[in-house]
Length: 209
Image (tube, rainbow, N blue to C red; front, side, top):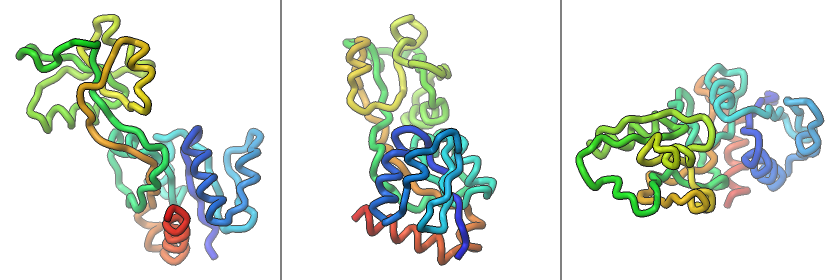
């Protein structure tokens, strides 16, 4: 049986991915106690787990060095894709939202608005779908700061509880879309290792159910 590689986003998605794998009967002790290693063999299943940052998960899967990956839908929407998105894993659930300073009327006049975000492609696509011309400003750090400094009129960001927004005097005025973790598969690998990959997908699906 082919020993496959799956790239998994580090952080919270890694922990929830390992919980899923354990429900599937996989021994995840090597990944739970990784030391400095970034690639780990599952002892009782023909699978290696590669720990990576979210954008790199997509890169590894697209280039075929990993047959599968687990990554947030937010990263998929921002980067585009040339792979199969085969399963919504349900965990890591949150949403893209448009937020502004409390009481600010974002659509109150015809002035061109400025929007700060870590996800410029998502933001542009959203406002384009509404027929609204905005200036999108890319921010790498905490986007909540941008309206406080007067850099932008609003932000497009991932929202979970809304606590950080509230603490900085911002509130959500529109939900853009729900996002969660997805299982993705390299297009060539899907053909080359179809039995192994379909077997893994079905084990995932059964454990989620």
